[in-house]
Image (cartoon, rainbow, N blue to C red; front, side, top):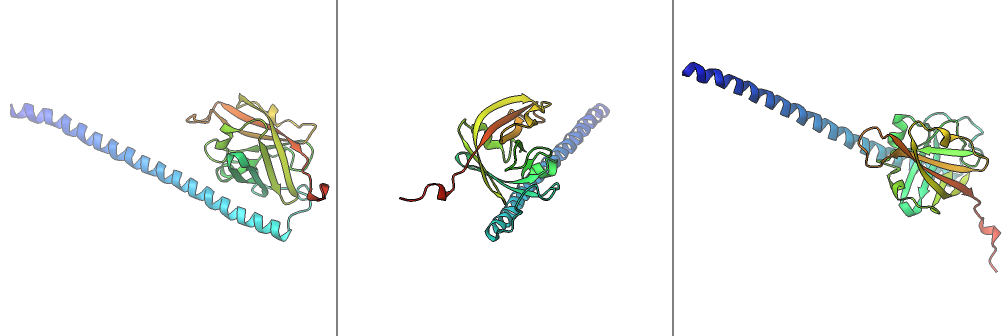
Length: 214
């Protein structure tokens, strides 16, 4: 009887140890995941605040380049700032679309036009951070790109959902155009299968001198 009881107790103890080990493993994994997520959020906010202050100081001093295309841009260079007032979207735009850049900012996709030049200006952003407000974008919404060369305003003309492999949305356009790209669905967990694309056309901003006071 005793030997039978001891034999039955051993599997229970082994099972209990396995359960405890699994519990602590997943607890540690969860804490590491939460810690990394917190780091990503804090790092992105710190980067945005730092680059925002530098960008505003540059605009105030008038030290921006006269033409964005005058000097070849390298990955990580700040192009300016994107604003969508109705959605309270405001973020620094950086040259490049690497994982590190998109974790910290909105990325300008290389080989597409620069703001103020003819063609298609394409910007990418994560659906769970900077471009999450795009889920509520509407036709006619105003988008502004603030750059060292001036402000460029666009009006949203269309939205569409395309497969992730679709690169036609990056093609050049005959008129100045802005294309915003993020993953879709917005609430999808993991690598999303599609892309949400916003297309906007540039409009001419009137200077105060164009309408003199009577």
